[in-house]
Length: 100
Image (cartoon, rainbow, N blue to C red; front, top):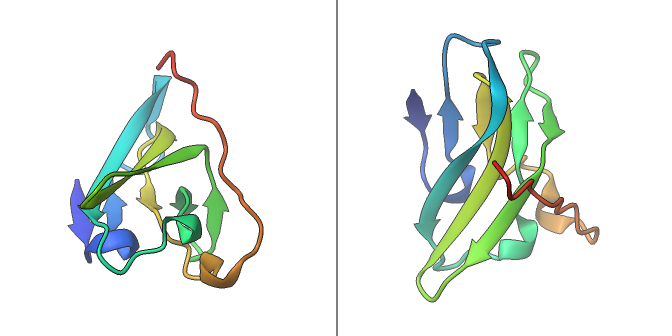
């Protein structure tokens, strides 16, 4: 696993890419909430061509931190910020399967 960047723009890379889990897992990314609008965050798979695909996620805001819980089904590259969602008025949040 490699982590690039920090805060909501952090990118987490798992390898070998493409290896699938028998059951989905949760990737948790926690960072300071200072200056971050939680409504602009999400869960995204970064595709090989650099585009992003939204995956199920949950944003949890605490007093000093924000945690993004992203449901992942395989090793790949994930982030909590697709770089385009900051000005979106839609709420893309999807429910994570709590049984995982």
